[in-house]
Amino acid sequence: MKYFYLLVILAFLLSCERGWKPPENPEPKLILNEAKNDYKEKRYEDALAKHVWFHDHALEYQSSMSGVRLSFALGSWKRLGESYPPALKTLKRIRDNKTDLLAQEKGNRNLFHDVMALNRTLGDDNKTVDLFRKLDKDQEDLAKQCWIVAKHVIIKAKAYDLVRNYIGNPVREFGAVKEMYDRNRANYRNKNFGEKFKVYNENNFVEETIQLIDVAIALDDIKAAKEIQEKALKILNDYRLTNAIPVEKEKNVSA
Image (cartoon, rainbow, N blue to C red):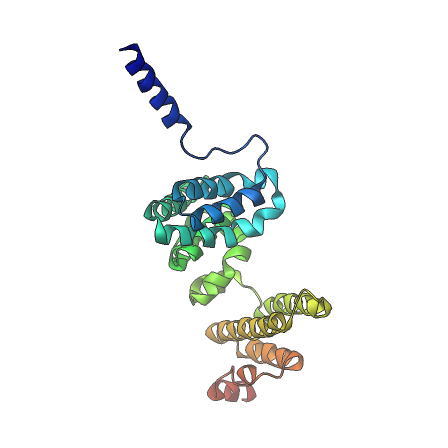
């Protein structure tokens, strides 16, 4: 009988030990790589535990992981969720909990950025627009802080009523697009950046410029649209930029 109870106690202790726990001095990058390997080896529970830990604690140990945390790490977590439904459920639950905190006026711009990245990963950008709209209504100061993070999603959704309140001068916004293009262009000489990066940079410049031209047109600022187009064509002679303003709108500028 004593042997039986010993077995029961041992089984209980083993059950408590099951499941991944972070080491005493965790290295976020190493843990993220382990999560990816666990996924490949179908150790799904451990992979999920490591993804959750990385999302919650990585920046406490390595602030430079902020970009990875909201991009590659979430993409890897989403892939895990496609094979292991509890991982997707956990991802959505974390997103919903953080959204609720913002709605309850318990959040900040960093939390909004988390929610926006989670929505992007889950294919729910519309939820980011809805959340920003709520902030615009109930927490105007926070909405102003979040605009720089949210503007690409808001503009892409063509929520022009919000854009009108926050974008200011579209020509000034184009300055930021050009600055990013120039910064990336400086890397062309770096052997770590190949032709694909150049193609990406130029295509991104054209697409973001056209997006701003569309915004200016939607806001009935055809002069700004034309100015952005002319400035952009001096940088890249791309047919998409040439045709960005409909002919009938160009006639209005001339008139």
